[in-house]
Amino acid sequence: MRDIPWSKPVRIKLPYGMQRNVEGPVAALDLLDREWPARQGRHYEAARSVCRAALERMTSAEAAREIFISASIEAAVAVH
Image 1 (cartoon, rainbow, N blue to C red):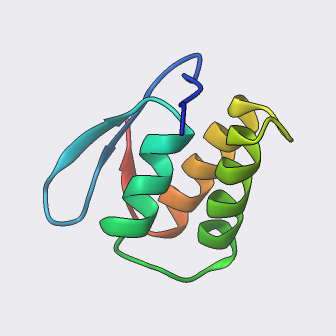
Image 2 (image 1 turned 90 degrees about the vertical axis):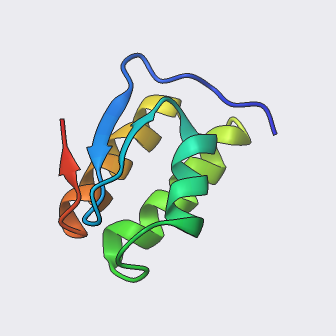
Image 3 (image 1 turned 60 degrees about the vertical axis):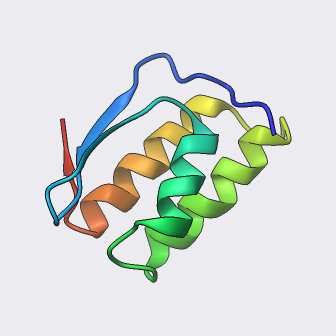
């Protein structure tokens, strides 16, 4: 699946200390599916859905970026 770069990467710090630069919906989905500390919640589910929609060109990559930030806040993942 080909990624669509965000206008500005989202730098996050996961609760166990790992930092990541998330540059688009593919990387966001990978994190949400493999490393996310809270796999439930309204924003978590929305982020997964909107990231997939962005990759299918059904919404913008920037919409996926914004909901990913919301999911980060919901999960107490630090956003820089």
